[in-house]
Image (cartoon, rainbow, N blue to C red; front, top):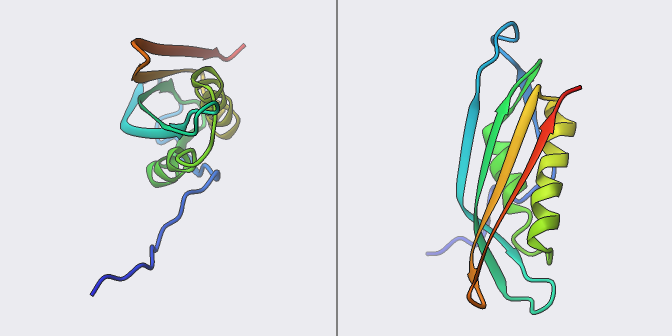
Length: 123
């Protein structure tokens, strides 16, 4: 019998944990090949691979919360440029990294392949 109860739900809450080596610069990379949002013009799904690269300072993002955060865009209408910038803004706010890059590599739509790259550098 199928159980429709889902124990996890999408969330905009990005959780963090203390960087185990804050004295050292090191790079963390994440790749989410199953990112989905909705086209704000047509309501059709837009699929993308979201790539995140960052050098943490005092905090690191917790992976389950990142997964649920990215999942939260599944039913939101948003432009590629807007969602890629929003992901960077939210991750920077949560983790306060030394530097971060987010790449939204969106599948071809209407014959056009879109890649949006946004960067943050701590001052």
